[in-house]
Length: 44
Length: 292
Image 1 (cartoon, rainbow over the protein chains, first blue to last red):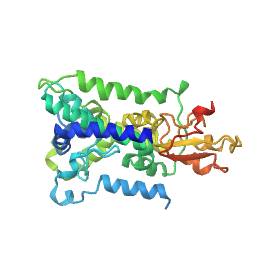
Image 2: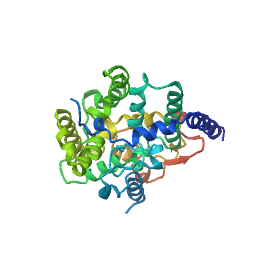
Image 3: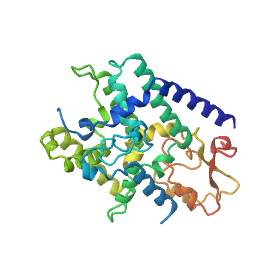
Image 4: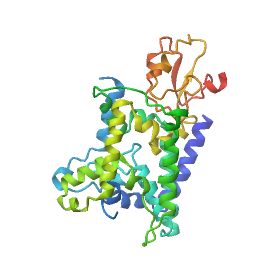
């Protein structure tokens, strides 16, 4: 129970700050772009 | 079909269910891309719904020098949140049951061919993933800087077989104009992909066991996460059938919750006396650590 509580508090803390500072926009912008590096294309 | 296979198929569909890309030729850019999926699944894949946690982590590290403080803090806490969420909740259960690339390796292993557990002297193959994590996930993205001030996506660019297959080949099929960009790095990555597939035909989950840095990160949580394996010494008859079936060649019960266990649960299923059990969310009183 104590372990679960620590886990939930930790997650709440991380996601609250992450969402407050729009961390999801960073993820969205990077994940929504075709990444030439991931594909192994582009500059050598 | 067994339960594990069913969950793997379901997870693969959830990771890569955007079939509209066949008609639009574009990757999914909607609401779900604000989240990371647990498995190794390239977000440049035309069918991918979510971000790849490893790709997003590297994207964060390559941009550290150019991010404003607000974006830096937001991305740092948000991305860390996903790793803690997946790690503490499931650990490497993700590798065994949810990762689409792991599922692909399971399917590849079914190809009838020479089978062998590849073990190098001193089991050095187990340390490859540590080297990849440190060098390709952290050092190259952080310290190899381009003229624009960004780092380089070390793992994605030079190694990631999921990126080559899902991002590379599928996008090349859809976008003819991208084919002009194929060069040395793409051929190198293709060679790595083919090599990994060949090794996975011979040795079950060769990539997961020895090379995957995402699996290693989740593996660090194996001892602390909610989903843990426990061992009951009173029931054990020391038949060693569990050790013989373990694809990671782990010593059971000593390494039952080690970094290298990717939670196939073969040991649990094959044990004739049910000496190995899966504990969900409760403190493991019979864990191997306490027995020792």
